[in-house]
Length: 282
Image (spheres, helix red, strand yellow):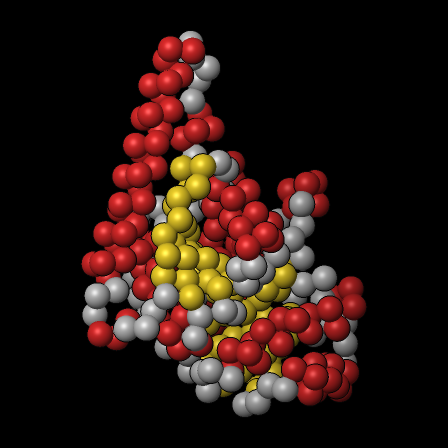
């Protein structure tokens, strides 16, 4: 996690996520990039060749203003002594938000995305969704989702929701990497799959196997019964145990599969009261 990408749309939620990313970067010796994506170019209607020149000039001016605003944010929030040594750069790009973020991760080596969320409900959630959900669905690196109102991490206890399948090893390796920087307790919440039910003994065996290979310490195992809304159950359990972070894997379902089954991780990230770290798994 040496290069952190922080999408900023100048909302309070994104500014809060930026401050979290800055503290995280200082703690782990990473650099951060503030990214503003200008999606206005997607909606510019065809114009005459004479009007086109003016439109280009206006768009250039818009991008310059966005870059100036990013610089202003850096000056406002990172002038304090606690941010001495922080390496942060500002980037403005044109295009589709999710495509730009995915392109930067894949081509420029960013290995963590930190972004804020306001949550969604009703028809907005069903028909529009959020940029956060779409980034989780398509990004090839972990995505750290920060709810509005949180400006600093306090990692004392984290909750890892898992079915303890071997393909989730990468998720536990990511948790181990964090545990090397932050000495936290790990609560593993076993999500019981009724189609592939395991005995208590086999659950413990799978847990020990994954923990041994990841090198995690301070681990406790819990389980919950099958439920219709697993996302809500995870959030409720995190609230009960006073967890500071929820870690979940995502299969990055697409197309019809995603429409039919949705994503527990995306749903939890869209309704969370504490940070959620989404880790892509095979």
